[in-house]
Length: 209
Length: 209
DNA sequence: TTTCCTGTGGCACTCGTTGTCGCGAGCATC
DNA sequence: GATGCTCGCGACAACGAGTGCCACAGGAAA
Image 1 (spheres, rainbow over the protein chains, first blue to last red):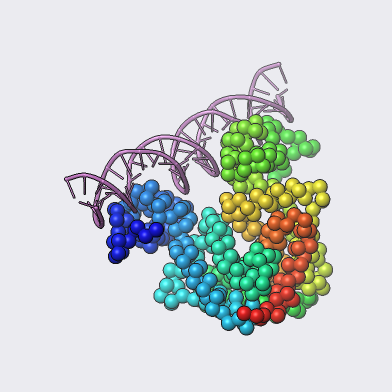
Image 2: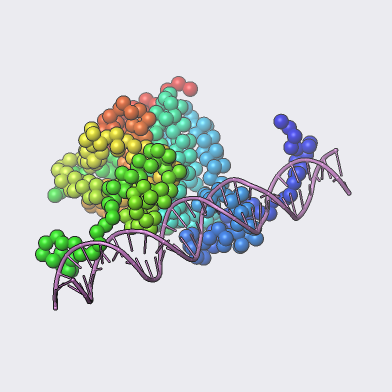
């Protein structure tokens, strides 16, 4: 190895015509204007002054655009899990990390909302997001497995990661529906409910009729 | 209304060339042979002796084929919920109904396994299944909301239905991975874990390092 | 200048999906 | 048994996502 950088960080060939971030920005503008489905790759490419073919060198699919640099963020979530105090109860650790993972600067919140609006409301993206969720779950399952001393694909890590994801999506949907609520607060409450087996609010659910 | 059946169940126009069930059968054979992705609509149509256009009159998409008559089954799950004793605790009722919903005749189990193998392992189907899951969740959420006296799209019904679905998928994945296990048993155990907040098996998860 | 490397983008092709439209095959009615 | 009405079939065309191929552009290094 060691052939690329000749000492400094010098590049070699032709310079990229754009960047993922720039493409994302342009695409989101179009999505906002005419909607996700009505925006074609050609539209995006034209608006970004690149060829249609080039678009696919930056994103594997049209769907991928809305996920930005999710993979990088997952890495940070993984490291957050790694730095959890070992004596912290499992479900509590998950709650802390997940809530923290979804904490954003107030200034980027509107942006994040638009992104999640797409992901959770456009059917094509709802569907595609499942594949990204799998990566997210893998991070949670990895942590659970390590804590429980089991394989990552054992039943319990799987179940907990799936259930945790489900609760988070529910919280997100609620947050989108009620713009005045605080996402982290909703997430925190629902993850607590999950840890309690939905016991607190449901215990006496043997009411009338 | 009342214009179709002229007293008896007489049909009127041309007879259908095939049926959903038949198409499903033919398609599954091809999927087993060459895989889902490598099977084109033309392949299926040709094997079923119908036109490519006609295929889309029976199924809205290639993905839909693997879900068979899921919608009808959901109706039965809804009625099962309706007949739950009102004094049964919420999470317990969910467990009973869901486990029962996934109980199959031993003779159709291999078939069901093949179906779920596709749904949970082929990426295109993993993605698409999200849309079907939404219908499933709606049935659960409807029941929860009725029990809790809230709107169906309130936070808790949403969260519980999402979490329940998650746990079920985890159980299914485990069942696919370990063919010797009993699906209903795994489902039952994991739904109990969920109701307990993953407390039983996890409580003392403050072990070494 | 030449060489090499890397990103670009046009072209052509596959495949899923949809709208349109004319045709075919039954039933009912005269 | 001709006619009309219906409902399903299927050919055709078109669109858009995604992919392989390949020639080319434009910078760095030799």
